[in-house]
Image 1 (cartoon, rainbow, N blue to C red):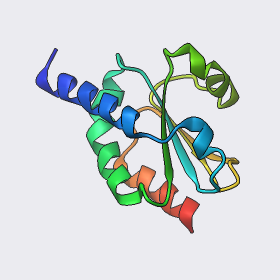
Image 2 (tube, rainbow, N blue to C red):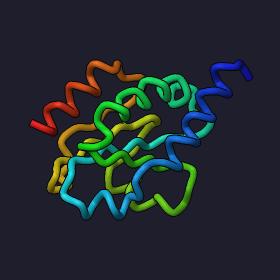
Image 3 (cartoon, rainbow, N blue to C red):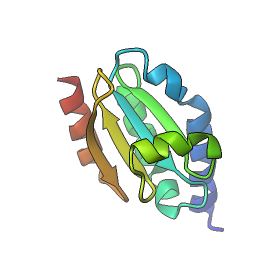
Image 4 (cartoon, rainbow, N blue to C red):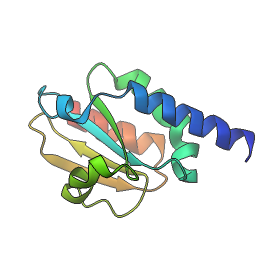
Length: 120
């Protein structure tokens, strides 16, 4: 494993621990970003620093939820949001209605743009 892979995985685990519980996010009337990820996902690991940076910018205004697709407890949300690959970023408005789904390696500018639209 490369150093960046190890660092990315460590950052994913830290971010997942700090993320808001799924149930709380669905009940607090704030827009939500759900990241469906997997520990083995190289793209998830390489995007972790970008997402951490964006989280620092928008974390107060947006619910940040991270759900590991390999954890059976998330089977219902995985089915509900039609997760077909990781990472998948599902954006929900303040009424918890799905507004956007992005899959794969997404540039920071795109994630930021979608978040700004959610907040406007």
